[in-house]
Length: 303
Image: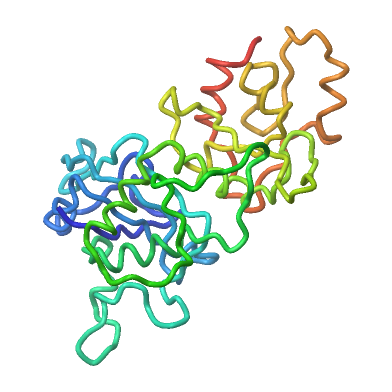
């Protein structure tokens, strides 16, 4: 098993869905197969306008021939393993490229950087992960005190320790714990929505500087909903409660719909922003995916 880098762009011609599958030609089969059972980092090329750089990780569960395309294969991702970074991680971190393995003996970037599927060393993988998760201004939870435990690998500002393989693996393993994934998902969602409730339009913080907004999954984790920005909404506590209980929902064009079972429709309408539509994320590509919205309407929303 080995860590890997998979290049993906939003306008890709390939049949990719980063949280579930990655399509690639036979020429990359050996490299992709080496990643089965291990983690990969997704990278969007710098030539893409508004490139996200290194932007997410996922674990490859298997490689299968693509039944719809000759000489094409699919890397299938382990369900629930995909996780986006709350921070932008560029190819060049300002002090040189983060993938040191791409440098040749002269210290220049080699042709390996053009490969859509390539191996990456544990050191380089951890360097990217550390920058992707670093907290320069932590988004504090709405309530309670966040305790630091061995399950939360966010003590990233401490002095640089010598490289220990087991130490790096511990950080990756921590990405599978729910407490860590919820915390990272919240940062991703709140920053995408500018820390503003997408239903009410309110952007509030309490006296302690905590954002009074939650990161809600459209399709819940318990129902196989992925930790992907297109499955997330920034909602205030009341809006979150109503959404989870199916009292409000969303159409595919992001109109906020109210259940006929609401016993105080006028009160609910007063909470919704004046447009009657979801105040979407700052970047259009982060907007809710119709498939998740449809799932919520069919399984949660009370008609």
